[in-house]
Image (cartoon, rainbow, N blue to C red; front, side, top):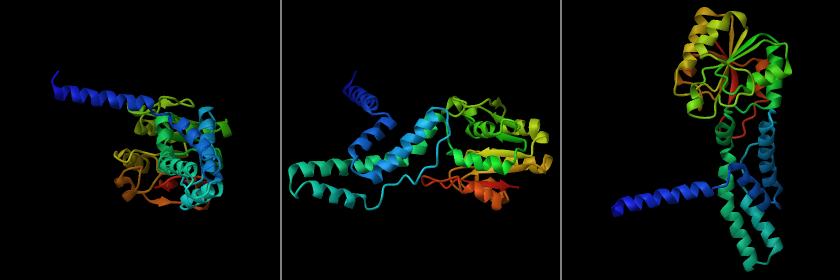
Length: 285
């Protein structure tokens, strides 16, 4: 093994050790909750995330989250607290201040990455919270509904639990199981059908089709809308995603006619955004 190969091997070993030593996401948050125990503004955010994760892990829909952003003046708050405990120049106070300041950007990154954690751990892309599903169920009024691209089925599961008598067809192609957790841990019964096949099978039996977080790099959403317009014009398409952002194709957003009537706005009031992604629900025609 020549020196260059040996150097590369050492780099790989070092990187592997760093990955092994890194704390899991939730454990990191719990560590920071203990560190910032004296700061309710921070503990509030962390506890909301921990409770959200606990509910999802136990098969329940979480509650809405606040914006997971640290207060702009958090360093001032911490500085004041440290000065109340230690006189300026005190070595112990300086060490504590440095611990806080070093941890803040890491905690900020963790909070901002909660959606990534949900995607990687549970295959949950849209943040399907309990009040939102209740509002969506009321909007549907028990009418037969087809969910395409259902992933692990959080939306269909929530609707089925609220109205067991309502006809809900949950379908997904399962194409993404090779790439991430989507479809690997279904929380309800999901039929393995791609979006177009599902519409052709159930389009004549439903009043609504739900399409949540269609991939932004594919134009399957546009194909879905064209199929509904052509063969099932009476079926209403509900689209959940970020317009011209993280979800759905540019072609879809450019060609879909989007509306939000008063009833749908009530649903949107419960679809709280906790990060920079502004997901909403639209009626697309």
